[in-house]
Figure 1 (cartoon, rainbow, N blue to C red):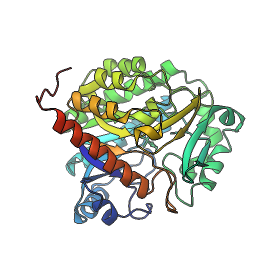
Figure 2 (cartoon, rainbow, N blue to C red):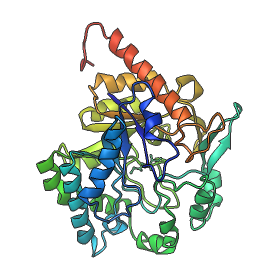
Figure 3 (cartoon, rainbow, N blue to C red):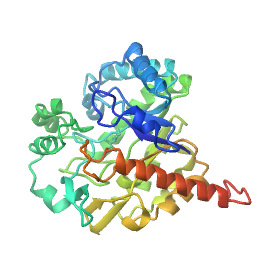
Length: 362
Ligand code: DNO
């Protein structure tokens, strides 16, 4: 497994490449052209500039998170082919720069959703948290403002202020989109990009819905083993794969994380590993990565990834805000560095205790 950290680019991130380089065992970053709107073409020169910057700092780009999908593609609007064409050009340009792992999501209107970006914990740190009762009281049209006014001045991924002005229009676009229709539109998109992905050995790793159930009555389709199977079977090609995200899939306690890893093993191309504390149905806080700080058994998660032979990029996911650090909520340096170090410790212990070298045996 290649340990990485998500990095939003020097203009947007409080964390520097130099700092990332000093986290033991972190050899790469997962990054993006954060200024790009969904549907815009990523020019080769811009991609190369980003790549050169990362490499000059002694790191490697191990994957792109995200190349976001235009809402016309998600809703199957009449102009979707134009945006798919642009997406294809972007994929070709990324492949020219030898960047072949793409994380994306297919969530309507909102990417991930939280009710608080800074819930105080007993240890004095703050974390992102979710409470369905609070979400039910929020007007979806005001949630953009709430998220952005609590983000310490950073632009949160998926909550770009440009989308705020279009929120009514966006809800209107999704009015008649059922989960079946959304899946159909995703399959249409994947079939259109199949040729370019196969030709360039590009892996598309869809990110699960976060949380793993419909929010604001908008459909969500990548949230359980059954639904992920449906997608992977519908376009049964290697390029169509999964980002395993413990925090997103694990938001629903019915999801068995190890079973999901074992089921989709060779179609998992990227792993986001974080811990949550479940309080009750629909109510959870994010936690430190350590198993005993939350509800997940991180050893079992990493062991399952190891057992299926996962050797792609892995990253600690959201961290707590600790030691007075001010950063984009969830994406500070300190707690993610602790998380990377802990996860690397688990990986080393699992590798070294596998004395019989029985990798792949289950
Ligand atoms: C939140 C992230 C998501 C994720 C996208 C992938 O912090 O996990 O924004 O990057 O859903 O496209």
